[in-house]
Length: 453
Ligand SMILES: [Zn+2]
Image (cartoon, rainbow, N blue to C red; front, top):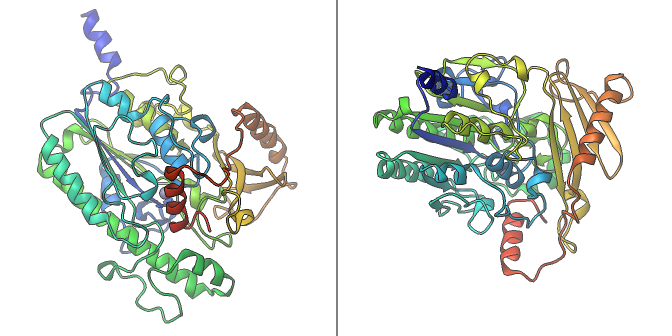
């Protein structure tokens, strides 16, 4: 009997650990473009499939990424560590082998592991493959390609091939990233009569942005949402296949994004340079019908929490502090008790400098940190020493900087400076022009995607 009690206590969820894990990441999907997170909800929603998943599972309405662009964010997702602790921050940084990744931990426990990705920045050689027995990056065809369909096709084929094993599959969608393409089936832009077109080069958009009127910005938001709708439909096709195969009740599904997109909310187009909520706030849905009851949780949570949560649910209660993770398991919240998370303060950081000799280095360099609390948000631009303080409750768009006008600022500054001091010192997140051909291939990809000029 005692053994039985211990067993029950160890199981993270009633009914025990699910057999499988499906992790779905949609690149460049900010929370403010996801139907079920919008108030008022758009009618019709352009993310009906994600909304339906959210009704079947737990919706974290305040989920944040610790980094405003793909490579550090995904390294944080895989390791549960802050960017300055896994070290993937500059243009050619790679995820070091010494870090235990989610896929490695699951593979070590006998999971069949596979990744399907269409994100060029996650191609082989960048360190993200660790732990994945198969890593299919053949769908990464560049910024103009529409690849959601081929990612779902490959993910469905992989599921079919591994349905009888205990599996962990990552399905990674890229389309909402620029260039923003038009999708007739999800049309939100056909009424536009201005000069902008689908598929425009992001630097062209940036150069013309000073002349944009509200209808031009609405057009870009519309195109971006058409891309999101296209990815949403393909995610739905993958999830329906999971159900058709009878795997839905034994597969933990986690859906999230690496970061969002700036579409002129603060005068820029793209991501990576700032830490505003249009970049940091992302969707997070966790679904396991029958074992996790649907609910909405408003407490702040992080992408860093996903690896500890999946490991705990999969039956590997890890000691996150011992494992060197900055995230925490969200299992208690999934079981209905989010009280431990409610006053939590999260951090985000970016330390990126283009290689010497490139154009627009100044404009593209960013060294910032941010503290995100349930109500207040403080951003520190380290080179200038400037702080910005926002009341997320009354000003969710972060348009009124209250630095110097609220005593909260000084308390949060202490905390944010202490966080910065606790970070490992980097020699530099910048890189000199490189003779390494792998670095040069990386730099070419970054240039193609608008991270360098
Ligand atoms: Zn990304």
